[in-house]
Length: 401
Ligand SMILES: *Cc1c(COP(=O)(O)O)cnc(C)c1O
Image (cartoon, rainbow, N blue to C red):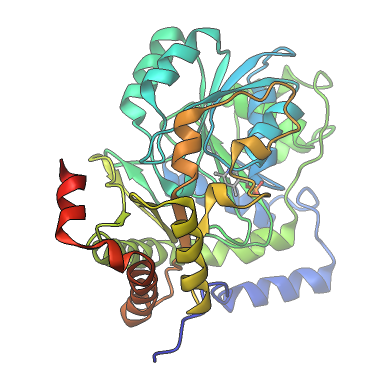
């Protein structure tokens, strides 16, 4: 049998990073505001240019970027922030951290925001965070139309969506603010780190100061100086700056981005086509304006009981592929019922039903197509092993009725 590919290892960091890191270690100059042209400032300029945004601020994580976004919007204590119920636990946490209250919105079986529930919850909202969860883009045309009409600011949590486009526009540039992650499991890997982008000078000025540009360090940011001057000494300093070494590790990866995006999409679509051949598996289609940048694949189990689901996961695991059903483990940080730090945890039946049968498999961009075939084959064999006996013609007739 072919060897099962390792889906956990990261891609090596380009050698160019090593040259800069060595220089930085020699000089000991690791703080972003020591020099005028630190790798952090260069990263901000390059990232903003690559995405087509006016301003960027690099920070210690995407969670910090979300937190600073909410703070920079000037939301009062207990402001309501609508977030999708299918997201990573760091998202409701950033809302709580910003002294706001998350309002969870249902997500459908295609992992995207349920627009009916979204429209119903919007009237009570002061702001909205759209998580493009695992890169799945919700209908941004409909969301922006609703939010613009109600004058509610939209923050895009594009932590895991870098490289995705919607109607030809880069994800993260559609709402008022876009936030991205450089944590190791995302498309650009610095271990930890994040960045926020916006076209709003006043908003980025506030975020820059609150991220820890104390005294006159904000002068090292190329934003209209007038936007900064009026906030001098008026805002708290949360100190969520990015380390210079992290920026040095990320910058040479920017060139790798187009390749990672196209290979990730190729791998995803290749495996999706195979999984969709099984009557027990369904990979939801993307929305038409979306071009994805996946590094994993999600699919739903169709007509499988809880026991069959468990047997399927066990069969895939024993063949070497780890399939995670979001709702089936007691500690999954993407299952909303595990966010017990929220004081008022609602029930969301649609999202729960999706999470109980939605599977998650890593599919890094560096895999070759034959390696993807091994993974798809193991998943298909596992489902056949568990469900094969059901596949009598009568069963198929009943289902299509
Ligand atoms: C990873 C992730 C985050 C958090 O990013 P950090 O940089 O680790 O704080 C937030 N939202 C989504 C959708 C993510 O995938």
